[in-house]
Image 1 (cartoon, each protein chain N blue to C red):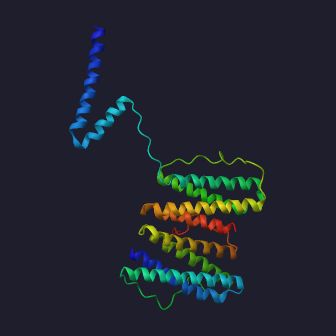
Image 2 (image 1 turned 45 degrees about the horizontal axis):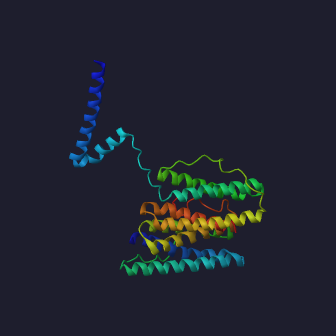
Image 3 (image 1 turned 90 degrees about the vertical axis):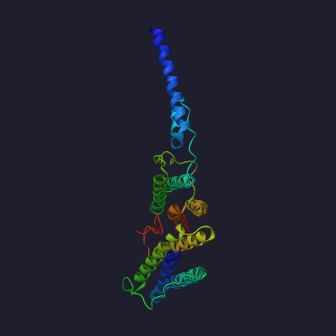
Length: 168
Length: 141
């Protein structure tokens, strides 16, 4: 009796899957749904979604903010000058994350000081070089952006240019 | 595209007018050079916009005979304040152009917006306004 019951259940499960598959093939609008239902039953992993084209801009904003954090740690006298610029990058990262549905890693993880402290002038000059490079990539991202995103990305590019100016 | 270009043109014309007022209240060679270079840049952008609108056969509103200043410009401090406000406004007028252009035209609009934002930062630094930068230049406040 027990054995028979188990066999019958297994048969039922197969036939149910076949029904789902058939439904997926027969109804045009529901084809995708039926197929993905099969995928879920089979535990097939979904292919990973392609990263948003603005993800590199978000990563760059976080890296810039971390560079400022390191500079401030090694040269506390620069804090008043550099903190607002670091804050701008964090605001950019938060706005981009909201736009593309990404999660911004919590601050502090990447802000540990590394290497010997630079001279203040060296730090400011290297930050300025980094801002100029970041402006270029934001300009490219703005030119490639959809109309809906062009304004935000353009403002980020312009902000990076003003940072380079403020570090002169 | 034309309403956005027309708005940018109106902002550039207002900037040219404002720098005439600003210039007479500045009293150092550095400030005056800054204002002259800025005014020249705005004239260049105005000419570009006039040509662009003519190319698409769009009529633009004639520039007004005069402007009412947002506050009296009586000394260097108020002149710098107006210069900051003018450049912020020009950046804001170019931002909507980004969404209605592509390729080189968008690149030109972004350059115009960025240069206005950079001039606003330079004026803030001369006026000792901190911070000298905005997180989103061109975004209306």
